Image 1 (cartoon, rainbow, N blue to C red):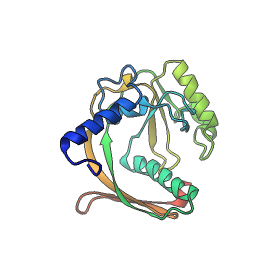
Image 2 (image 1 turned 90 degrees about the vertical axis):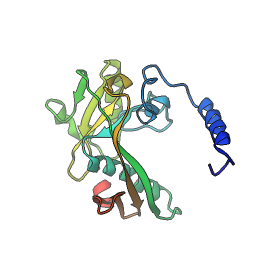
Image 3 (image 1 turned 120 degrees about the vertical axis):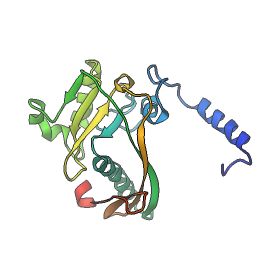
Image 4 (image 1 turned 90 degrees about the horizontal axis):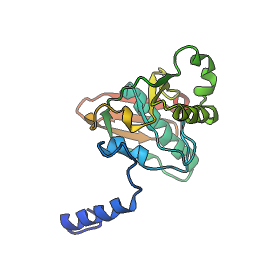
Length: 206
């Protein structure tokens, strides 16, 4: 809306932007954009279970706190990697619930795979976990459940490898959290009067 003068112009601009994006991969057509978007792009930057330019992965967590801790890590990492950037003021983020279920799940928190926790839960190297993610996709697995290394309580996260694992096409329970970040801590506050708050220090996240 900052670039246009009317709703009609905004709609036209949105159409142009949509046409410039990669096509939605098969299986995502039914999904809300919050669920479909991670599968749409092959990022040149890797993630825990995805090497650069491999198919997208949707990441979530079983607890809101865990999800916020994971997000907070990347905000802190951004500040630490760009020394000239000022601290990040509070910005709204949407937190939502998604439903996924499969019989083809790899749970890294259970035996025997938990014995290799040092590889899956490494704080800085994703080499082993990316190799595992590639093997999981080759075996047609759909979900990887694993321990969060950013959440101080180490609750579980999930990596959804295929849109077929989502049992509902739309997210539910959406609400807003405001997140502000400095180089020593990240603060998260629910966007409601007297809402919940979390603070993650650099020591927790790194």
